[in-house]
Length: 187
Image (tube, rainbow, N blue to C red; front, side, top):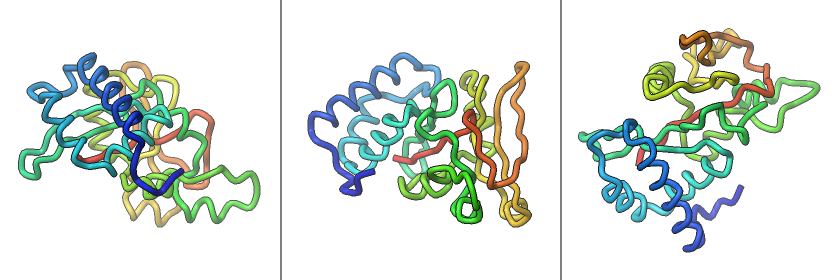
């Protein structure tokens, strides 16, 4: 992962095109929001474009899911149908990764998100995402875990099964091919 936080001009154009197509295709996710306003905000923030590119490269399919008037920020979530392919098979956080003696995953969900400058979805955000469509029908996604649970070496994750959203728990050291993580980004 590069740390320059800038993209080549051609990639910026490509990325904005991808995001605009997704924005137009899924208008119900962001009623009342204009692409021109989002695009102008993104174009003025190269680091946010870099982050969105990283989310896109790991197949997160980031999309606008809201706007906070108080802070004048657009909210992006990973909106891929399943947990992003490029962010699966990670344990929960760095402490969990460090504690594994054998068969270590390549990274942790929280650690990777921190490198990008984003956070895992909260349980509330995940529930909101599930109101916008049906996500994680075959996979699951790590979620921000309350510190009280994390201290007990547990973490939460969510998925959708049987037309219902479930929030479960697992040990922080666990990792599965079908479990990744979704993030939120304010721009």
